[in-house]
Amino acid sequence: MTDIDGNAVAAEIRDGVADCVETLKRAGVEPALATVLMSDDPASETYVSMKQNDCEEVGIDGIHVDVDDDAPAEELYDTVDELNADDSVHGVLVQMPVVDQVDTRRVLRSVDPAKDVDGFHPENVGRLVAGNPRFKPCTPHGIQRLLAAAGVDPEGKEAVVVGRSDIVGKPMANLLFGRGEGGNATTTVCHSRTDDLASHTRRADIVVAAAGIPEFITADMISEGATVIDVGINRVERDGESTLVGDVAYDEVADKAGAITPVPGGVGPMTRAMLLYNTVKAASEQHGVEIDLP
Ligand code: NAD
Image (cartoon, rainbow, N blue to C red):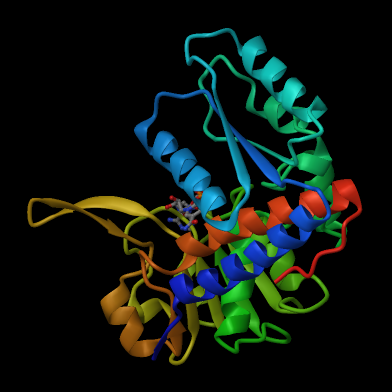
């Protein structure tokens, strides 16, 4: 069994992004990512500050706007409008989930598609489905890169995606069955209403687990030698201590899988690296500066 090292692959991508930042700066462009938070959820606060630190590390200008979680929704929409109109900002990301008074769909629609580095605007979703993506959503794009780094070409293989969310499951399936490098797999999407999940996962050469249920993919559910990508991040109590586990029962599945991503250190770092990738891509397209994307 091979452990697929997300930290190592992400570090390579970050190095390549840092080179792109240099190229952009030589051409007079200071790439900038704006994050917007309207929530008092400590996890969201942590995610945003991690994204800001990641920006700093590769030389991207990180701008953060906090919108009071008691404020009217208009304040968030106005903030996004201002960032859209600001030519010195290349990527705009509203950290999800937002507070209840905000219409999530309206927020996703309000980000300028050219600055939508998460890839969640309906125009960008449409382009992905049409096979002409502008920004691939960060988590599935990162997984595509992990598969490539592990020498796993999905072409012609059976892939099973467990989960049909807008941010992971759906875009993942589109990338896996889509044409081109990292695609061309015969792809099944399973979800909460799937009957006999194991009968699908057992057939798969590639399993992507993104259901958000701790350790629910067990060894009997996968075939010998399969590639198992664990997207889940679940906080659980173990021996009186809080710890992170994935959606895959790592120890038992690792014995049977051909390759597997650990949690932490698998998909998570890739998601973060691909956000930086999308940000320099956005800056390069907005200013017509050619860069050599990693
Ligand atoms: P979500 O809750 O939006 O979607 C979960 C999906 O799982 C749903 O589509 C649902 O139909 C499916 N599901 C639920 N129970 C199921 C079952 N018994 N059998 C089959 N399918 C079932 O979650 P999400 O946002 O897609 O995230 C999934 C997990 O991935 C979470 O643990 C989340 O924290 C994690 N995540 C990790 C990263 C990362 O960078 N590593 C990024 C995004 C999400």
